[in-house]
Amino acid sequence: MARCLRPLCAVLALASSALALSNVCADIEKLISPASAVYYPNDTSAHYAADVAHWAASSSQVAACSVEPGTAVDVSKILKLIGRTRTPFAVRGAGHTMNLGWSSTTGVHIAMKRFASVQYNADSQTVDIGAGLRWDDVYAALAPFGVNVVGGRVNGVGVAGFTLGGGFSYKTNQYGLTVDTVVAYELVKPNGAIVNVTECSEPDLFFGLKGGMNNFGIVTRFTLKTHPQSQVWGGLIAYVGQEPAVSAAVAKFSATSTDPKAAILPSYNFVQGQLAISHFVFYDGPTPPPGLFDDFLAIPSVVQDVSTRSFLSLVQSGHSEVYAGHRGAFHSLCLLAYTPAMMAAIANETNFWGAKLAPSGASFISYAVEPFLPSLYTHNPDGTPTAFPFARTDPGLLPLNLYYAWAPPGTVGGPDGTFHAAMKASVAHLLRVAAADGQDVARAPLYPNYVLADTPLERVYGRNLPRLRAIRRRVDPHRVMGLAGGLKF
Ligand SMILES: Cc1cc2nc3c(=O)[nH]c(=O)nc-3n(C[C@H](O)[C@H](O)[C@H](O)COP(=O)(O)OP(=O)(O)OC[C@H]3O[C@@H](n4cnc5c(N)ncnc54)[C@H](O)[C@@H]3O)c2cc1C
Ligand SMILES: *[C@@H]1O[C@H](CO)[C@@H](O)[C@H](O)[C@H]1NC(C)=O
Ligand SMILES: *[C@@H]1O[C@H](CO)[C@@H](O)[C@H](O)[C@H]1NC(C)=O
Ligand SMILES: *[C@@H]1O[C@H](CO)[C@@H](O)[C@H](O)[C@H]1NC(C)=O
Image (cartoon, rainbow, N blue to C red; front, top):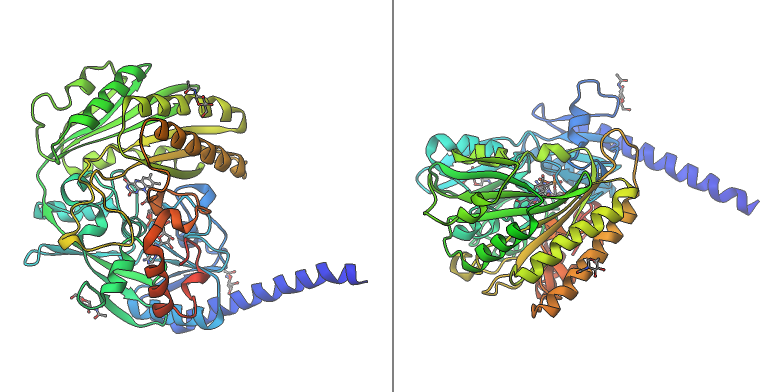
């Protein structure tokens, strides 16, 4: 008898939590102003589907309802209700996280898309950006003013998650991470208070929001510094069968380039049974200095979409939509230098795991090499510390981002565990190669926007963790933001 009761209890518990959730959704409908709306899975207007969708299929869940708040006051009402009823929820910017549950939920899904205004303030050289926007929208809105911000490098990526994690940009060599350029956050705190957080108003919280992800509330607006923006030079070069020459050129560029306006982003990809390199070159000006990119231009390529163009056009040459809808994951490590030995190991990892994971349905096995200047972390104003990165050493630690994709659209589910385990094995191998290469990076901070969900908090936040936990205890004593997924302090 006791054995039979257990499943019955489970079914009843499930039914009662579904009922509780639908009550919360209905209560939200009653609370909010006409600027906001609630949608259910039965929605035929496509709002619900767009709200819960993610760039990677593996990051999506079926939420009880999606809510599109249109005002900070409505966000506050929603968050207070969620806290009171202990309802699982998610906050989504543009849905580009690779981790399930970080901006998805089976509870109340808050889609920020109605926070969509871009307000340029010429006097203060800043811009107010709604938390529901993608970088593409921001670049387009700022272009007429001849200014720009430190933001995403390929099309479609959201401002909110990117900025809350740190933000590596084509402009990072000049101005630092996106967090180094934030001057204010409009924040709905876990207790529902709506505040502008600045260095002066709440230095602790300002520090925490600079890399601390969704631990401290829901951001409705980011105020970023702007910089003058001319036309830029660059775009995509794709190589097949040229790995030794490209690796040599990348290692040389990485060791010798000192021009902060120059950036490269080569990705080593195993696709359709072979190694291909998609290489982005960027110069923040209409023409690069003579010689800087000649090595890359001289290697025979299969695509060369390089020109003088608008910043937005360059970002859109990234074509990130190609792998949208596949299942996928990111994972990463940091290096002190992209040496020839590391480049060889990265090429070997790409080939090794590409071939090994093909039978499991791999569609794209990729290693994105990010050789910023060693000074990339020296641009934080007045040396203000930020939640990420916890170490601002010079030479700075350079991220290497693994992106594996599998189970393309049309397939159901996928062996996610196989791919996550392979990524961990690959990172462990690359750390051994780095150690043998004289690079002491086993404890280097990992970028929160590039890690698998089960990465220990210490590996991401290191010695900042006690301070972040203390801020969390003060700002969110009842762990309301713990009802949403993510790295939790
Ligand atoms: C194709 C692609 C290219 C990328 N390129 C880069 C790159 O060049 N540089 C780089 O640094 N990163 C890059 N990333 C990583 C990127 O920073 C993360 O994917 C980031 O999560 C994107 O933000 P989002 O708003 O789209 O994410 P979402 O999935 O919407 O959100 C991510 C996290 O932020 C939280 N969040 C979102 N909105 C809010 C809010 N308003 N208040 C509080 N919490 C919120 C969510 O709860 C979630 O935990 C890239 C990712 C992809 C898929
Ligand atoms: C859709 O689902 C919601 C919540 O269950 C319900 O209130 C609403 O009546 C449904 N709408 C339609 C058109 O079925
Ligand atoms: C935050 O600052 C902006 C710009 O100065 C202002 O418009 C807004 O009302 C402020 N919000 C709050 C909650 O004080
Ligand atoms: C290639 O990578 C695999 C997997 O990490 C590793 O076992 C192997 O030793 C590497 N080979 C070389 C030549 O580096």
